Image 1 (cartoon, one colour):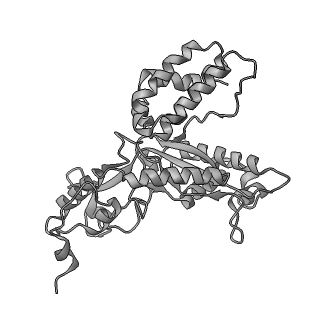
Image 2 (tube, rainbow, N blue to C red; image 1 turned 180 degrees about the vertical axis):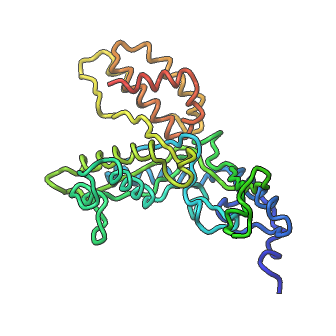
Image 3 (cartoon, rainbow, N blue to C red; image 1 turned 45 degrees about the horizontal axis):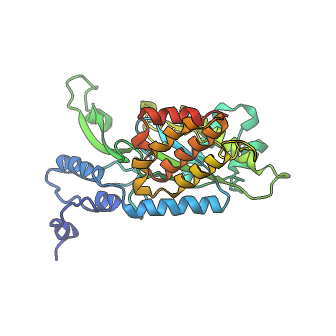
Length: 344
């Protein structure tokens, strides 16, 4: 009877492979394990985000919106690795979506990070037994008032649109760390052991929800306070492993309030704005990168700043829906657009 690895050894890597499945099941060469691990990490990083995931992500966003769930986008500053200590053939791991093989952040990790930040940094008002702490984070008998959803990867973001990247942990004194009492103290001539692992980049959709009725309509205030705590925690403490080395830091993206600005019925730009908004919304995803810049050029034809800001925000939203925000992030006209859209 042949082993499973013998049965799998003739299967060749393809760009359409499932990243999580390939990482977990398709390491077959046990004779040169170090080289095999490096190759495996590189192969997994080369797998593009599945097209089916992009469709799933759009459905997920629409479902959250229909349910009244509040969302914000958080972008990794550098690299992030969640689930490093989970069981894996590489001795290191990374949290990947079971169905689509893309990185994500478990809701439990977000809740734990925010709760830890509240206890450590926010003083007596947020100690473990305080009312505010228990409302949001709960206790051993109550799960708390705020529901933390898993944060899903936004398709097309990350370095060159790829969310996963090869990384290395170097153990400089492996024998010493094994705890053998007969081993001499660590020295500069010890042989370091490089261990490959996967880290993630990109933007992630963080979603929070709460019951409709709580303390006379204070639902929105509690959600906003939770986002505030989580934002500070992501930026200062970081999420996941290796945060002491700078991994896991994230920042919330600027999310202008689309409802904050409205034009009066008698304003001269009203018809023009309505036309532009309809045209922008109607652009097919595949054509957004080619057509959307023309609407930035049309901003100068409008007389009021308020009209320009409304159209600018519509352009940004359409870019995000088409998953090309990362591509345009460093482009001059898009940076100017972001600055305009952030005005109130």
